[in-house]
Image 1: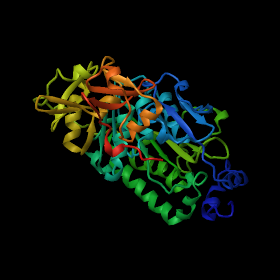
Image 2: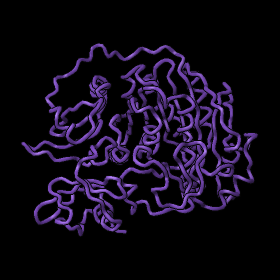
Image 3: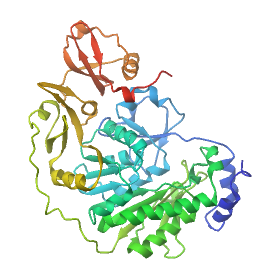
Length: 457
């Protein structure tokens, strides 16, 4: 396999004094997938609830673990309940950076610009102080649904999911304290776990990706406030997409490099860009248990015109404010109607949500509580997975077989009379909510959303 690695890529890396060609080639001789997960601390307190073979902790990420083998996550109800997310270990380095910058202890406004499928968004949401606002954007309409689904599983109400070109964020100057741009790239960092990606790599594609990265950043970085932080990352090894982009950002947008101390025991390579000697971090699969990854931390020095909130006024809200409290712990939240669907969202960011609506296409905001149909209230799937759902709502525990049948949207063999339940009932597995059923006198209706039901495997 070492002979199949692109010569142009190998030659470009040989100029790096930290690059060990032989070790790099040797690790790529075998296609090996390292499996890792990160648990959702709002839903489970420790890893013991998840019955996987754990093979060590990931040192640069809190609540993250390597697995000795890859299970079929689709068949695990706890995955669908949002107890954990399967994410590549190297990319979880963002968690360490955010904590080193103390973003876990302050209330901020954050943007994950290229967010689908949602691994980094759920990581950011777990790490940030829960009084923060997180906007997660995906440019492709075909990918925004999976982003929204993964954030719904994670269960927090402080999230806005948007579906916009990065240029739209130029209409929010100086708005965000933090921007994470995990940019589309040529993907050479994935060669180790996916040899088919090698055939798609070329210098022409590297150049194309570099140009796209500059466009994405150039049209959106004005949304970052003065003194705000930009985390720029790729899964590429090419300097054209990494250090050279960092030098370009420093030249064009008056940002400065920020160095964060990293343990030498981790195997992370600390590099410097050619022009400005900006500190950058590289992950190589022959040095650590993870795939190829690049990250740089930048702080904005330039004074930025600030998006004015002064013109924003609270709109008349016709949403009933008493319904949500029957279903959810609504402390610090307010209710609003989107068509006939009732949402809850942090009252602290009520005006911010109006401002975001004025300039962005919003796919989802906060937590959907339910739909009002006349006098009837139909609870939404989002509500079932919310971290704020009330503990006294009627519920029933399922076995593994019952839970899998529920997730397939099939009939479940439950003795209704024995449970003595009627109406809307939560179903859970090992104490984790999965969704709703409606218990009728002679039958049970399965309300798991058909668009996310699992197929028979």
